[in-house]
Amino acid sequence: MIRQILNKLPRKPSSKSSAAAAAAAADPSLTPSSARASSNTVKKFPGSQPADAVGNGPADAVGNGHAADADSFALSLLAYEPLPSFRDVPSSEKPGLFLKKLAMCCVVLDFGDPGRNLREKEVKRQTLLELVDYVVSGGAKFSEAAMQEATRMLAANLFRVLPSSNVERHRSPDGFDGEEEEPAMEPAWPHLQVVYEFLLRFLASPDTHAKLAKRYIDHSFVLQLLDLFDSEDQREREYLKTILHRVYGKFMVHRPFIRKAINNIFYRFIFESEKHNGIAELLEILGSVINGFALPLKEEHKLFLVRALIPLHKPKCVALYHHQLSYCITQFVEKDYKLADTVIRGLLKYWPVTNSSKEVMFLGELEEVLELTQVAEFQRCMVPLFRQIGRCLNSSHFQVAERALFLWNNDHIRNLIIQNRKVILPIIFPSLERNNRSHWNQAVQSLTLNVRKLLLDADQELFNGCLLKFEHDDTKEKAAQEKRELTWKRLEEVAASRAISNEAVLVSRFVSSLSIAAPSPLPTAAALSPVTGM
Image 1: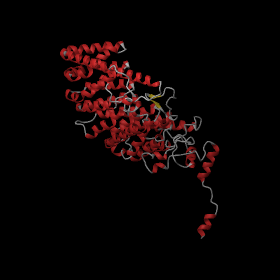
Image 2: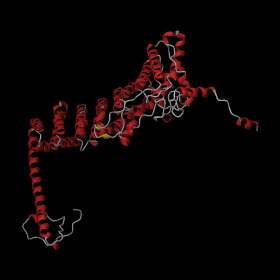
Image 3: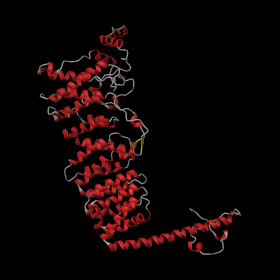
Image 4: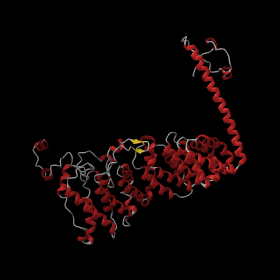
């Protein structure tokens, strides 16, 4: 009863609330609805903070929108004064000063408004630069408290929800639409760059022990780092690429997890969204990782090739990352030449039908793979392979036909073709002969003549046999075409004769073309049966 009466009495306002009110009066931009700080969320996870705790709304006064009270932020700005330089304190006090500077940099400011909190922004930038210099200078092993505070500062500044425009941006088949705006640049980059530089130097420093640091640079930290690869700012992605490579090299315990997480990003990109800004950078990291795989290759790595890398040829925007993808594919074939058959059949599975520029890229990658292919693997896939090459030779797009003919300029590929000419020549000869007789492009005709001469010199008897067969098949095809034309002409005559009386014309699908072509009186409607499925 007494406690209920006391609760009804008015309370004296706290000193923190008074200070917050004073700060709000001094700076009208510090509104309770927009001010944020990062002290609350770090208690859950000392290395970083959950992605769902990060906001990006325009009302966030700290730019990256970490959840905390407006009062705490206002108080932190009131006390946001430069700390002494590391040069001005004795060595015994430097570790403590390092922690204070890290805690000071956990306050994230609003960079959406360039004219806001200018003094605090400059103080923070100078403090970050001093932290980078301190890490580079070395000389003192980082304690567990220093690592915890460092990861807390990194999480507060780096981990944020990226702008939604990169999700809603529509791509053309070859990448970004030329009429659209340039990718959005991060307004906080002058500060973010120094934070990324601190993280890079922190990872590379010999004073950072991997066994101790892995407690804070853990799986959650790595996942949020990978989420940032979708940033539209290429400068940020370049830093992330270098940093993730350092993490992969320094923390061996995280390597399987990093590969699996990248795998999941690729799956979402291939089978769900087909929108991600960092695929090229992730593939560039994987190119170095694949290069370091031990032999024989693990089954896990082969599955990664089949389930992730080869299907990456499917998206329309493959041109944005094809160079890096092709490098990863060839690295696998260099490691294990028996994978050449798997890779070539995978390329054939995702071979473009109407996209000529994509076909040219595929032919270039195919040449790189064939150059590493041994005879046994080549023989397993040469029939479907050269059926596709034959279609490329007859392409009306001269660059596709030209790029396919350039395969014969490669000595290794030419030797493979000549060794297996009895199988390959009958497949591609019709395409070569049609190019020679009727292709519209003079350069394609000239290259076709060169290839024909190579094949003629390799086996004249086989070449002549293929030529005879082509002429025979061509004669049969022309005769069949003439029969079809005569059939349609006869049908048109019958239809014209019945048009006057408005009588329906029904023609049997089984009527012999010879009987139609033969001179005979016009058939009556009773002699013609109904047609289904014409």
